[in-house]
Image (tube, rainbow, N blue to C red; front, side, top):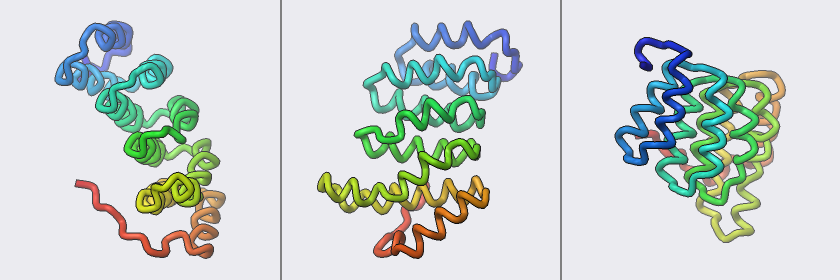
Amino acid sequence: LGLIGDPGATTRLLDALQRYSDGQTFNAVLAALAKIRDPQSVNRLCVFLVMSRDKGVRKSLIEALGTMKLAEAVPGLCDLIHDEDIAIRAAIIQALGDIQHPSAIPALVTMLQDNERLKAAGLLAVGPRISYLASEALKVIGTREAEEAVEAWKQSGGRKGFWPFRKS
C-alpha cells in the first residue's frame, strides 16, 4: 500500500497499527505510512506516540514522523521534546531537524540549554549531546532566528567539552 502511495490506504494502515504489535509488521506499516505522507495520519501517529510506553515503538513512530517531513507533526513532537527518556528526546530532536519547519525553532532553542537541566538531574554526560543535536537541527532549518540561536549558544560555550556522536 505504501508503494502505491494511495492516501485512501491511510485509514486501513492506521487501523493495522493498533492490531499488530510485533515489530516487523508494525515497522512495515509505519514505512508504508511514511511513503504515503498523508497529513491526516499525523494526529493518530502522535496519539499512538503519547499512549505507548514501549521505547522501541515510540522511537519508530518518531522516526516515521521525521521521515514524512510534514509540518503537521511539529506541534506533537514539540509537546514531547522534554520526554524523560533521553533517547526519545534525541529522536524527537532529530525528527524535527528532518522536518526542517521553522515552527520547531522555539522548542529546539530550549534544547540548547538542556545541558543545564540534565546537569541538575545528574545526567551531565548526556546534556551536551542533546544540545548538540538541537544545534544541528537548527542549522538545518537555517532561518536567521535558528542561526542566531546556534551562534549565541556557541558564544556562551555551548560546545565546550563536547564530542559529537556519529550516527551509525
